[in-house]
Length: 425
Image 1: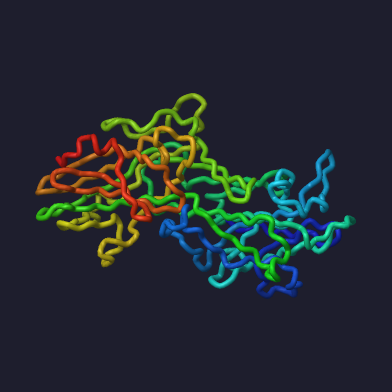
Image 2 (image 1 turned 90 degrees about the vertical axis):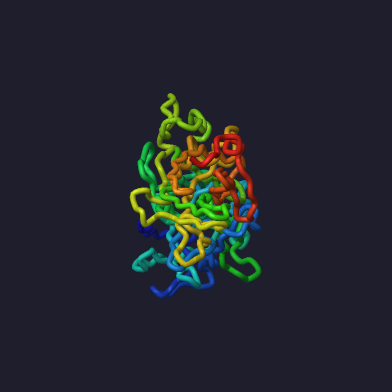
């Protein structure tokens, strides 16, 4: 994991900032009444929040590190911009276009389980805490009226998030990239992707109700997908030998903080050619239509059960169900193995919300006969970030039916499967 940048700001009448963080934990005296402290981070569990929980993280675990940038005093316009203290009390939506990370930039913050501290993941580097403004330079502006905005991201890992360059002026944006190379990756590990979240707190005054801590509510930008094998037959068991999901998936996004909450814009969704193809099509490839940036997509196969390892075989007895990868002894209903995907929220008309050319591949034995089936994967509901979706592979008589359930136990299927050839062969 990347270590943080140890940057010390200026302190005085013309200071822009002093870095940074949560609480001082012992490397020298600090004016405690003026330190910017962060509250224990919270995690929004879904959109809407009644969805039971997000994939992977519903709380920030102890020892995790997240990044923060902070903004307060915008720059003036013109050829020689300077800190505009008279505009520091403006609301974020009015001043973000001239903003600069004057309070802190790309600051690693560690949650130790009870509080936030200014240390890196290894706990070896101490960062001097950031401070609220107490001076407005030569102006008559009152620092008590200054409004602060903080943006945060997790994980603090250069493989995922890329903040704007230090000293960048304008509406803050950070880049996000999935940890896979563009183009064909072959075999993909569904457990490799870390949960990714962003947070934004706007228009925070130095002291609110005599409480100086800054709240951060993280929101997920990925959604989870797992598989459950259900055997609705009364006498025959089902043995699943391999289970995989292949396709081309969204790889990158930009998160904008222009408003009061983050907006995720997925790249590659308007320009990628083609859609989900019919059964029997070639394995998915990145479309090479001119003008398409292949860096915005990755393709490959997420394998949930390996056909090369018979110990991965899953036996589902009659009238029962097992989630792929469920912890042994959990009666088959733990979270199991899920893949985290970057969903596209707007603009799609061909149901390619999670990617293109998606297919489910399953090999099984039923009634003593081996079967091998490929099912085109089309999600006809817009996915919600922070939600864990379950693909139910239902063995019913001599049919293999596919349905979805979400965290709130809503269930649906898609037309392409219902009207296709579902006979177990």
